[in-house]
Length: 406
Image (cartoon, rainbow, N blue to C red; front, side):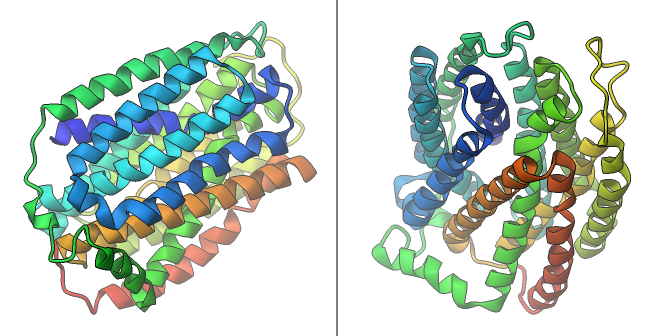
């Protein structure tokens, strides 16, 4: 079951984080503006938020495994439709379906962690491993899409053939899930799957610990999605890299996130989570301040390659290494403080506000990118970094008052 969950999460990592690549390719293939392209983030994230908010508290009744199978079957159909009808309107529909089904997947995956782990330490470890696998999927996605992009003619629609591959992989994971088994009885509280379960999710919002936590994940997603979505465009327009290389170079960011999350599981055995995240935030701010000036006035080099690319191509994406532990750690701390039959409702809130933060982050970054510059857009990430640090202080104090449940 863990293998099935891990592969499921990796597939959606490719699909979700392809939005930056698809925006860049849509600008070239469909002659759209940056503002028009940025709506793909909204189609994805608002679908995630809406479906998660409405269905999260009812998933225990449907079953987490069944929900994941349904998600993969639906998204495979969306990928086939995109490959057969490559127009910008279809990209909007595809990302709406990807977002809607990911809401099912993420609630099911996060809630399953509580069923598969006996204590808080193992919960945090498994959370970081799964999020690390998500980032590994994100990394492979940049190379997968990059392999289908024609450098000689970036607008060539040959890149949509990648969706045939993604459809096949999604169906394969659905089959694997169909043959997996998991005891979900602990998730069935007295009110699970009833209308009262939805109200239970809303009641969580009145607790100070919860809204501090929500502010944390919202601000984190402002940074992660803002950088992740616009990094391929930053590489192409500011660093003057070729089209395929612009996408593939963004995989350094995903790789850094993957390494950071997989490593965090080991570091957390020796370092308190608050200390680790504080160090990471300070390091992130320092990296932004030190590396972005290197992106100023990069000359166009028609012979640019991996060996002579600007230093910032490799240096700035390393922010992912420091950013990586924040999201899974605060999620694990929050979920571990709740009974297992409340994990689906809490995960629903996580997904909703993560999606809203990602949408706003992408929109702000894209708008500043157009009006000012790519460097200015990425400098703005310093603001949510400072706000996250303030929220962490409050969150740490609140969670100290709650005994571990997971």
